[in-house]
Length: 244
Length: 244
DNA sequence: TCAAAAGTGTTTGGATTACACCCATGG
DNA sequence: CCATGGGTGTAATCCAAACACTTTTGA
Image 1 (cartoon, rainbow over the protein chains, first blue to last red):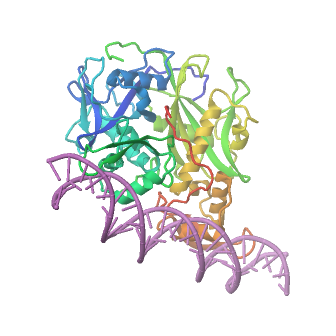
Image 2 (tube, helix red, strand yellow):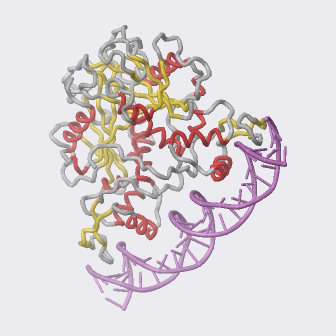
Image 3 (cartoon, helix red, strand yellow):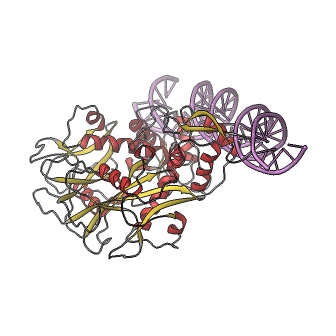
């Protein structure tokens, strides 16, 4: 670590994306099929290497996200997840990956953007239980991303990022139920989320797309943190960090 | 970002440490004085470049920590904080820093380990309010580290990492009060922390080092998460991530 | 015997839960 | 008019905040 030892190992820096959405009643993640070795033909997180020396990490993540999805970035939440740098995670050379986590609504448009590679939405459950085998250490990254997402729904309003621009309270509740894998009391959820100042903004409009009595349509409010939090019942997250 | 473009920019990867402790009734961070340009003479976070291509990031952080403090790592909590990679954060070349956060007890031993550089404990307040000017973007990193630490005390038992191997309930409460900058009700805190299964283990021994009635000495228990949490009253953390 | 700090009990209010019921629409 | 889902009300319970008092030592 002495700076006088100016040996800079040849390390490549990559930026990978864990892009989550809720579609078809499941939490799904965006994956691409690898066209080259190693792990050719396997699914992997979208991402790539830093393009030039002047590109900021956050900017690189935004660029990747725009390339993969073509979506308006204002409707997407993007944050840094973690950096992965095991020496043997890529057989070709040392690669350190700065991984970002994104929440986005289900796309009505075609899922892949300008890039030619096949981008597929995959339920995270099939990744976590091993039915879908991912390249490199990406399964572990997906596990970290899902745990972060589940945790963030408790104390932030980020669940709205999985919804279309206008949505009903029930649609928002379904997001929670799908991500957490548990059912929530409809009445308590409604009172809590509408009672949180700045969480939702009523548009005045209504919809009957679910059938039954018309439901009020809401947009995201300015509030980002949810206080008091909506807590999961079952799973307690495991503490990250080494040594106990 | 296509992988065929095998242009790997010359980027150096560093691992920096934000080592926090509680001493002299203040939350303090370990800093070193820089001996070379740029920022010669300024205080900076301890850290350095990856030593070789086979070193894991976590292992590099542990190595740095051992070098700086010489402390038994079992008594230290170490976790990844965030990665910083603005293109102009180091004028010499592109440097991406993977930063780690450490909690450790106040050292009775001399604070610097084998390394010759001067390591100094500095109150985080003097860093955050600008009285102490740090090199590079390290002030922002310190701000992130402190916010993470304050937040983690709410829902984990990591405050015990700031305490000696055996400590009293009041000493643990003082850690909370110092890190959060607010006072806690002694009785409610005592009932809550001793009532949390697995948080503390009574040693049976007592101490009168604070004067007054003898206090029971405790060790850290196996529990890592604190449920229910001990919540701060005042400050709500700001949501990380870009766009709103 | 007095000061100083540790430890315990109680009350009260707020929030969460677990309920049952009414409302508004489409068919 | 009836099935379907949206929205509101209410009582019991748990948790946490705010409080006063007793206990045990050193001086």
